[in-house]
Length: 435
Ligand SMILES: Nc1nc2c(ncn2[C@@H]2O[C@H](COP(=O)(O)OP(=O)(O)OP(=O)(O)O)[C@@H](O)[C@H]2O)c(=O)[nH]1
Ligand SMILES: [Mg+2]
Image (cartoon, protein in one colour):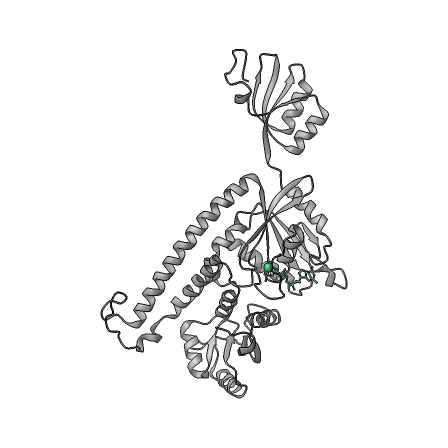
């Protein structure tokens, strides 16, 4: 694990320039990850890799160079900005004589530092165990066969088998606990979503989602200039124009190539995103790599099945811009500063437009001769039932949103009978005829 502050780990970074991404944006992000983990950057080696080596990912010459630098600068840890197979990690450790970790391990370490709630901690532990279970291969076979222990181990089992078994047991137990937490969350979410629409803030890490959450809801959740400051979801009511309301949620930020172990472990947290009625995709307008980040976030959204949810793109931190940004965006988008509070009203107005108010069910009464009114009711609501009453009136049971109901009440002569038709008349009258 990466130590922090007084006992700061001195890292030697290995940045591999693969054909896949831009070296510049990848390195910047990698530096932020290392610093966010609380480590110091001692030295860097760039590897321009035309080909990857199965045994150790990089060639012997580069390994020698790194070994020398690590020894001279007394680095404690070598971190690769690439994923390493368990055997590559071991071979590199042996060759360099220093601990080696990859990008996934680094991200897992940051998550472990950030986890506060019980659920957050369980999710991180699950991700770490999933990662660890793939590392427990042959390397430990040299360990002597264990003597049979009471209870835990079967006679003649190897250390490796025991560890594997324990890890699988723990993974199973965490999954079970997370499942029951998710079931509880699902029930709460269902009853919450029945009465109110939900809006989720999504986006790359450190773009200002939590700052915007605080601005929109008046909350005071943690905001930090660090990657993955938020792990656990927060919810709060937002008041929108036209007296509409919605539940806003803030969750974990995304990153390029988010390790699959994390997506797997954080699925229940990400369910908040999947079940949202509207997504606000927050982007950092000052980041040169904003369009790549947008793409990476959309990739994660599509992986978790949230790519069909209506989305508003919000370019944040515009207070830091010296000139207007040229946003190449054909989708609905807005420019805001969550910190300064600019662009918030237009954002609320757009959210309100997307959030169709929950309909209410009422019974409207009109006179038989009011055909214009009847037509208006049909065009403004969903008519469920229509019948005549004893008093020669017409009653219509409708589903209608409050805004339209108020419009109708203002413009035409109708009577709102509370309750449903069944309640208006307990027994259907002989004079009632249903169309
Ligand atoms: N100048 C400026 N800074 C901002 C703005 N919004 C957020 N920030 C800063 O950006 C940094 C990250 O903000 P957060 O709100 O924690 O970002 P986040 O997207 O929630 O980050 P994670 O939870 O780590 O994914 C903090 O230092 C904020 O003060 C803005 O509109 N203008
Ligand atoms: Mg946050």
